[in-house]
Every structure is written in C-alpha cells, then in structure tokens.
Amino acid sequence: MARAKIALIGAGNIGGTLAHLAAVKELGDVVMFDIAEGLPQGKALDIAESGPSEGFDADMKGTQDYADIAGADVCIVTAGVARKPGMSRDDLLGINLKVMKSVGEGIAQHAPNAFVICITNPLDAMVWALREFSGLPHEKVCGMAGVLDSARFRHFLAEEFNVSMRDVTAFVLGGHGDTMVPLTRYSTVAGIPLPDMVKMGWTSQEKLDEIVQRTRDGGAEIVGLLKTGSAFYAPATSAIEMAEAYLKDQKRVLPCAAYVDGAYGLNGFYVGVPTVIGAGGVERVVEIAMNKDEQAMFDNSVNAVKGLVDACKGIDDSLA
Ligand code: APR
Image (cartoon, rainbow, N blue to C red; front, side, top):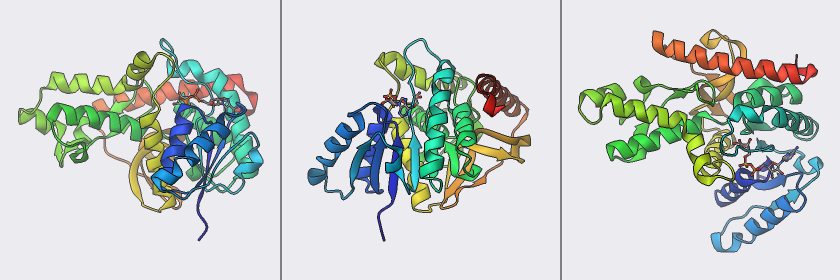
C-alpha cells in the first residue's frame, strides 16, 4: 500500500516540528507549504538528511505551490502569525482570517478528501472559518486545542502528585482561550477523580485551583518565556496524535474543536468537546453531563467563541 501523504500548511515553528515528528513516526510522506520562499524547502531537506541516522522512510518536500499537496490524506494548518508577549490569541484574528481564506481555497482545490486539523489561533474561530472557506464536510475539519490543553493539565497534575503522567487523565472543554473549562470531576489519577484526591489529602483545593488556572494560562506562560513566539513542541505533538488516530483508524477519544450540531444544546458550532477520531474523521461527539457550575463555565466559553465568530463575519462578508 502506498504511504499516506501529509500536507503541512505553514512551515514555521509548529510546521517544522510536525514534519519532524511525522517523519520519525513514519506516518507518511510530508509536503510542507509556506509562502516564505526557501523555508519549507530548507526544513524538508534538513529533516530528510536526518533520515539515515534516524532510519525512517518518508519523502520530504517543501513548496510554494498548492498543487503539490494534491491527494493529501491529512492537512495540518499552522499558517498565519503567532503570539508575541502581551498579545492574546484573539489579537491574531484579522490577519489569520485572511490566511484561512487562501488556505481553505487551496485545500478545497487540491486535497478535498483530506482530514484537516487546524492549529492557527484564535483556534475555535479559525477552524470554523477554514471549514466555511474550504466547504469540506464538517467531520473532516477540526481544530487542535483540547489535546494540548489536557496535556498541560496532565503534566501539572503529574508533577503535583509525583506520579507518572501516563496514569493521569484530564478533561478540558470549551474554547482554546482564557475561558477554557478544565473539568476536575472528570480528571483522574488512575481512575480516582481529582476531588477525591483532595479528600485523600494528596493535594489541597487551593493547589488544584492554581493548577486549573495555570492550565488556562499555559500558552501565555510559554509566550512570556520565549518572548519571540509561542509554544511549538507540545502543540505539534498533540496534532500528530490526532493525525495518527485518523490515519490508523484508532477511534481515540480525544478532545478537539469539533463541529457540534445537537449535542450540548448547540446548533452547528465549533468548540472544544470530547470526540472519537477514526478513519471517518470526527466520528462522534461525546456529550457528558455537567453540573450547574460546569455548565455556566462552558456557556461562558461558548459565548466567547461566538463573539470571535461574529467578528469574523464582520470582517469578511462571505462568511455572514
Ligand atoms: N500561507 C501559508 N503560510 C503562511 C501564510 C499563508 N498565507 N501566512 C503566513 N504563513 C506562514 C509563515 O511564513 C510562517 O512560516 O506560517 C508560518 C507560521 O509559523 P510561525 O510564525 O513560526 O508560527 P507557529 O509557532 O508555527 O504558530 C502558527 O499556530 O498555535 C498557533 O498561534 C499560533 O497562529 C499561530 C500558528
């Protein structure tokens, strides 16, 4: 069987890391598209030259021509600008919306059967716009945020409890922004819900609240440290986990920015929810029961995303 083809739209910090991970994991051949001449070509050649030592078989190509993504099985989109210190994800909206238009048209023309994972921020609004511009089926277009947010939550929890992060599960709902909703009740250490961990004396409620807030601010913490851009290793790893679930039909239960139509009282809206990802793309949205407080936080997050989607409609008439 021919190797899968993975198109990376944007070959910056995240795009380059995605290419490296896809190659090392032998997920398929990689084509990197970027408007910056030489950048995707240089990264593709550099990664290809790591092949003999690493021992992977994958073709690596850089391009400025959308025709080269033809027939891609997966497209991962990071094209656009990233945050600098002092900027929120929402500050990127105007610039990145224009980028989504050109990317959506490129994918629609050359890779209409691909599973598309958007990473460009502000994520929930950009994945919605990318779906609108591309016209692809809703279940084939989703956004990477929840896997990253829950990975950050899991990392902080594993540190707090001094246990392996493999035994920590975490649940994050809502938009990828300050209003995201880390749900402690559905997050566990080897199946023990976090509120029980507090009762068992492994941590305090105050410490848990701090970790929840640190998770919400996880992206900003990295931006503040790097000063010249935003996180890229963990975002790339998270998107590769989603791509692998699709390519290998793993039916992974992963949180992502998915099109929700019916569940959670939403009618046709992109927001972070737990999903099942397999060969059909986003095959299912998992609807969980929320208590009053959780529902209020989720509604607040949905409203924040709605505001961004409305702002997109205000900028580009074709989206209204
Ligand atoms: N088409 C293709 N590529 C583009 C376009 C476009 N219209 N506009 C910009 N790019 C490319 C840039 O040339 C750059 O190489 O997108 C790349 C973005 O790379 P970085 O600036 O390194 O940003 P990165 O850290 O990879 O983040 C990308 O993901 O997490 C989000 O907030 C982040 O929106 C940002 C995106």
